[in-house]
Length: 313
Ligand code: AHZ
Image (cartoon, rainbow, N blue to C red):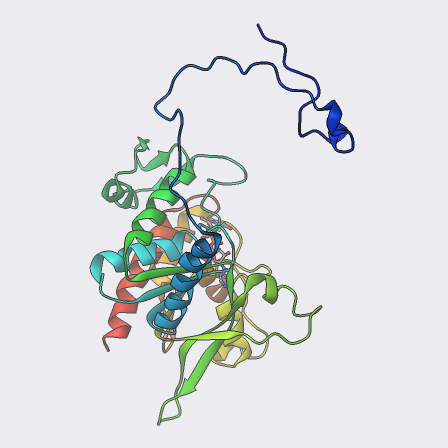
């Protein structure tokens, strides 16, 4: 048994007295592994910079005009992107997610619990993705929400025509009028989330824009960023019934009625904008469902078909 020196060579106590650096006793004899003597290929620091920035800016340029923009990479937004990459892999899809981590609330099942509950028949998506679950009869349980979310995410990101811009917030919408005077959504106004959060403390930092033929908004229920698209539509007077007082907000929890409503109400709320997931409940006043995720996944899948139909109109 070797004695590990109390004073490590890099500890603070040695900063001003290098002569006192304790040389560690001969290193422990380690068992051999396939990674012994590991050596990386050489690289220049500037190369790393260029490898990232050239691709990011190439993507920014390519997706300045997207076919479909999905706002929010939560369970609804991601399943929409997944379904689109399955039914229309050639369609150019930009996902804008304000958080660094995509996935929204779907990294946990509810509160801080790991398991994710999905009511049948939404388990068919898990079958398709080969995500294992315990079958409980009328519902299934995936042992960790992160397993479902990471699987979905990996499928989405493998499609060459999908680009996820994370740490980027949608601050506003592009709205235009057709020759008949009908207003429609024609894209999103974006900013780095860290900038969007600091507009009050910094001098004006103008945003960027992405034009798109269709927007699918899955911003989730109200919060600092949530329900951003419907709140903006209401302010712009594009959701007639909410022009005066804003959107009504989601209703109280009722699991049984909530999920069917979310899926069946998934729709194009104004020309060019399809709503999916809990953001719908904000505009419809329909109940929240709490920690059951089937409706989010199927609403996203349904939104993909509606988006494609709107794109091909
Ligand atoms: O960060 C948000 C999250 O990842 C992102 N988002 C929100 N506003 C944004 C903006 N720009 C860019 N302005 C934005 N991104 O959108 C994602 C929303 O994911 P979510 O998980 O919050 O919503 P969802 O509708 O996909 O799933 C809802 C899950 C819920 S909530 C609920 C309840 O409260 O009862 N039950 C379930 C299953």
